Image (cartoon, rainbow, N blue to C red):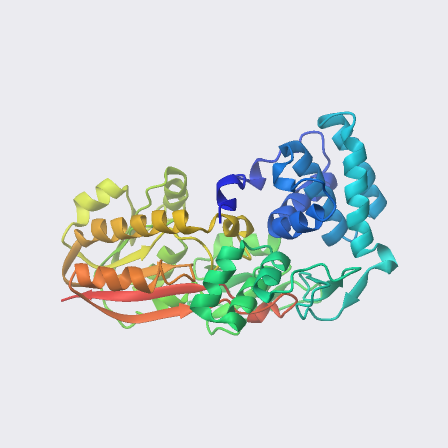
Amino acid sequence: MGRAKVFPEINTGDLDESGLDSRDGALVHMIVDTVCRHWLTLEFLIDLHCKEPLRDVEHKMQAVLLGGAAQIVYMDRVPVHAAIDTAVEWAKKYVRPGAGGMVNAVLRRVAEMVGAGEDRARRGAWTNQRDELLMRDGSALVLSSPVLPDQITARTAIVTSHPIGLVRRWVSQLGADEALRVAAHSLAVPPVTLNSAFVRAPLPDMDGAGMGCTRHATAGCHVAHEPGPWLGEMLSVRDDVWVQDAASVLAIRSIADLRPKVVADVCAGQGTKTRQLAATFPDAEIWASDPDPARSAVLATVFKGSAQVRVVSPLKLAESVRGKVELALLDVPCSNTGVLARRAEAKYRCGPEQLERLVTLQKEIFEATAGLMAPGSSMLYSTCSLDDGENIEVVEGAARVFEAKLSRANRTLPSGRPGGAAEEYSDGAFSALLSRK
């Protein structure tokens, strides 16, 4: 799990695209995303042909080998010879003149393992054999030889690009079969899902161009197909529908029978669940806050002019509603293990140190929120984590500390699979309600 200490902070929004046209810029983003999603798989394949482990090679060389291998293995629209030639020239220019030979040798060996063009062998469905790599469409790319580990947990970790410690933790908490399914889910392509439970007018149906909405398997949700300008235009003029994953909607739905008059969203982020709170409790006064300045700025923009939702700083929140809040939403920072299909880089940071840090923060948020609560009030705890240490163990501890009743605890595992129907996809989530005695 020490990989989390060396895995780089990557923000694809900061990529330098100067001098590139839109097509080349899109290719750069695709390469970076593919490397992030399949980092440990690519590292395993490269290490088979390197004299020293990839992580011990200088960073620029790591970058060129990972980027080249990503195109060869997962981006079959890029000709293999083009990927290798470009990588070799890049290494000569930006690493050192003699680096091209090593890059050429390693990438050619990787290419021999996966084939090129019509020589690429595929199976219709991934079955986790020792010669199979899982592709995002659910098929299996067949390697030239069974080089993957015999042990199924180690093999699953490599093929789905997860730290072995994370997969073992899932096995211990979820069982082997669910752990394998959850690991594979992270390679699925997440659709754009809409919370449509409060719509006042029909959503656009699918048209001949493939654009529009279809009903999700979760009631009150729709999938937006071919999202583009049409979706942005619709969301800009409608306040009765917004982007929200099908698992994310469940926390607030679980308490829709409550009738709070004063609600506090203490980790409101960019306001997705705040919008759901406002729609679920139209007669409530809602106070929304987030400690991060950037998210707080977005939050203020989303609810500008709202008569129901007040966006304030954490300090102002404490000054304004201390002792008055009847319902608080604690959508706390977490490891994101339920949303790894959307946040691929997060899986490399999951380890004991991160878990300890997050649990400490989650407990601090509980403690700070408790001072806002009115007698007989409730706190709804929510994460997008699958880990018991961040979920049930935290709320059970909070229930003891604050002498509260714990109820409505629910962990939703990710659903859908690579290549599966968009209408069946959802992230993972957890929520639980604590009611003060």
